Image (cartoon, rainbow, N blue to C red):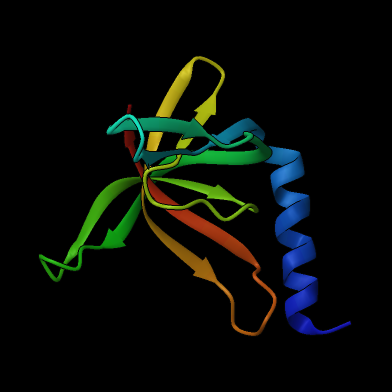
Length: 114
């Protein structure tokens, strides 16, 4: 087993111990040419474990560290996905994946209240 596989296993163990059940859902908009209308299609939600907390991150525009709310999870979200934990919902923003090899260890997603 490689070092990065060990780190991925450790990340999964930490989320199992400290994470809470969460759901990632995605809504895509399609265009119906026959009716000339847009329709929303909701993909099947993905159940995951996540931890949401404030974290210091580098702001690309400001060039300095700022405090943002960040969700840590094993499943990779996409921008504009919705993360739901209990009665709280967040919109996924910038996603950072720790993936030094072909194996993704963990995903960090900046989130805002929905």
